[in-house]
Image (tube, rainbow, N blue to C red; front, side, top):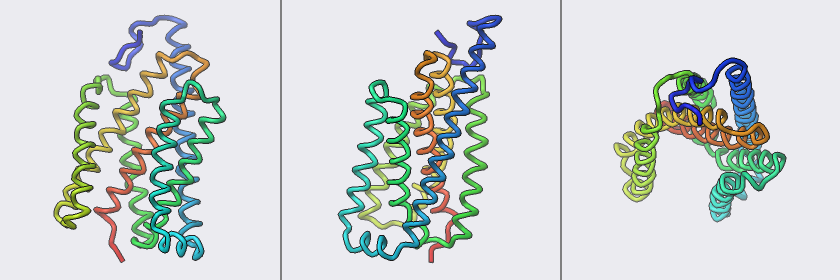
Length: 237
């Protein structure tokens, strides 16, 4: 068993060094895959936002947005539930396909926000995300119980967002944005610690698949944190 308090007290000598090497190797792969997926999403969004043909199709066929949303959920479920059955290449391919689909959806932010605001918000997101993932990796505190409260907060966040579709309340939107930032700040630290704990316990032959699952979790944290911060700091055209 591994220690949920993020230390290696249950190991000694060469086992500790080997375990630390495996964990650091896994985390590097997680961050590499996550960063590459963010680049894929950004490039896809930039292409889509600059394509008059795509934008015309998107706005004249509103059902296509639902296709993209359903595709995203399907891919996430496919990666999460079928991770043990999927090959490393298949799992990575689905992950980067998810990044492309998400980019096709997020292209509209370039129409709603000034590019300078988007860039500044991205830098703020990167800094905040970096600080929290470092905390999640190095903290000796067990964040397991925090995850339960974050999950309930996330459910409340989704419900409030759905309700506000009908209310169109700027006050509720502001509250949802603030809470969303706090939730995904917490989830970034929690997910990082969970990935590290899984890396400690996982057999060596599952590192690649674990890296894909971990990259997906942190990718979603980053994207959602970015979008909620954009709502707060962004100046709509």
